[in-house]
Image 1: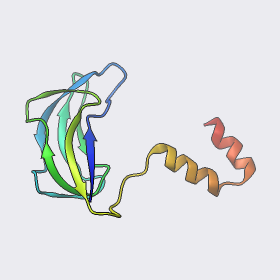
Image 2 (image 1 turned 90 degrees about the vertical axis):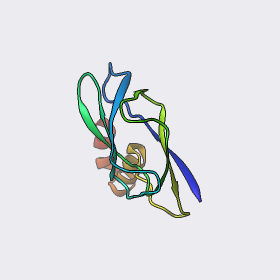
Image 3 (image 1 turned 120 degrees about the vertical axis):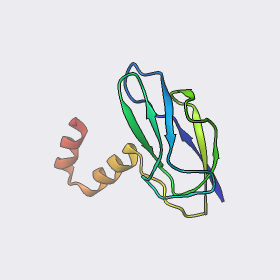
Image 4 (image 1 turned 30 degrees about the horizontal axis):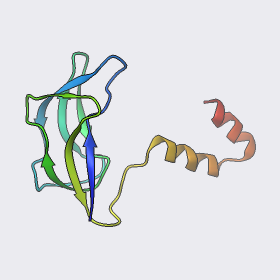
Amino acid sequence: MAQFDLIMPKMGESVAEATIIKWTKNEGDAIKIDETVLEIATDKVDSEIPSPFEGTLIKKLFKEGDVVQVGAVIAQISSEAGAKVAETPKQIHRKLKQMLLPKQRLHLLLL
């Protein structure tokens, strides 16, 4: 069984913290990949935070109304071996690069 940390994401260049408005999942709830776990607000935007992991929410580390620094662990998600994990932009870029012809790869590098 693996355990993953859900991190408060960076929501903009000058945003250093966010307020947890509402948890949409409770401890013990099953979570699918990209399913909303909580809603947050910054001075610039309100947003839903999806899970990059599939599993079970085992611990909320903050309460609704708490102000949390960007990069802080906000929850822990447990998953079975072989559970799905969202691909990072680097992984997606690597896959695209492998699928393209050499001429197309040069164009991808310029993006």
